[in-house]
Structures are given as C-alpha cells and as structure tokens.
Amino acid sequence: MKNILVFTLLLVSTTIFAQKTKITEGDWKDLKGISAYNLVFEYTDLQIPKFDSEDAFLEDKMNKRDDKEEGTGEEFKKNWFADRENRYEPKFIESFNKRFDDGEVKVGKGIGAEYTMKIHTTMLYPGYNVGVMRQNAKVEATLYVYKTDAPNTIIFAVEYTKIEGKGAMGYDYNSGYRISEGYAKLAKELAKTIQKKAK
Image 1 (cartoon, rainbow, N blue to C red):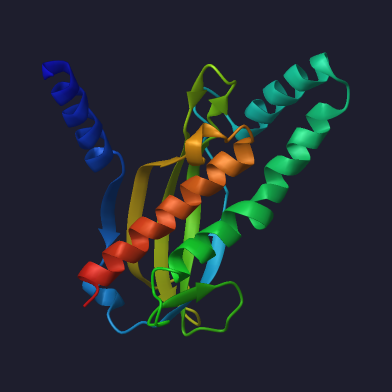
Image 2: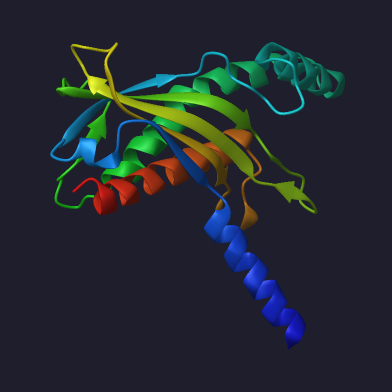
C-alpha cells in the first residue's frame, strides 16, 4: 500500500511540474480582449538533444535507415519537414480552438487578424517507441504576440519547455504523430492559461 502511495505521488508531481513557462516580455493581461490571432510557425535554429545541429540529426537518422533499407532515409527526411505543415500546425490549431467552444478566441494561419502569434519552435525531441521501450516526444517553443502590422514591437512573449507528446494507449510508433501530440499539449496549456489569466 505504501509503495502504491509513493508511486501515485510521484506520478502526480511529474504531471504537475512537467511543462514550464517563463514570460520574457509583457504580461498575460496584455492579451485581454484579443479574439483572434494569425499564426506564424518558425523552426529556425532548431535544437535536437544529443546532436550539434538539425542537419547532424537528419544525417544520423537517414544513414541508420538506409543501412536497413535503401531509400528510407530520404523518406524520413521528407516526412520530417512535411510533418510541420501536415501534422504539427493543424494539431496546434485544432487543439487551441476547441478550448473555446463559443469562438471567444481563435487562431489560424492567414486569417487576417489584427494580432499575430509566432510560435518559434526551439527544440524538438522525437522520442521513440520500439514496443518494449518508449520515450515521449518533447517540444520547446517561444511564443511571441505582436500587431500584424508591427512585427518588431513584441507585446507579449513566453517560453514553454518540457512539453511532452504521446499517443493514446502507447500506440505512437510514428515520430511525427508523437511530436504532433506535443503541439496539441502546447496549444492546450496556452489556451487554458489565456482563459485564466488574460482577463
């Protein structure tokens, strides 16, 4: 019984302290009254844990796949970049917007809103799932808010770290799927905080 209690407490504390935020410009209240954001996604200077650069990461993954089956390395690289527009960004938009059933606040790409939110992804860890062992994906990003016609004047900025992504019931064998769930989690946390603090 004691072991179960200790495990439960560890699980709860891990859940509570998993993701972290740090405001670097402005305050949540600066977002009060903003009902729509045009989204811009940026992936420059992306860090991958255990690799010096994104290029080094891709070279390693491509070589390992090509050693097993020629041509699969190039397919991995193609999907790595395509997943941004095909998986991560739609997942973020869907996850954020569904938190506001009344449409009080919405986000989208190219919607012509007065305000823009730029999501600059600073770190991606794809995680892995080989059946008997798995690791969640991890996403870190800095979010900037500015008037669409004044991109150099940042109204609000916040850093998110330790956002984890995983599929339901552990069926997340695709890295793009795992990472997309990290973006869904990021959007969920952002929406919840806006609901609570941007009043």
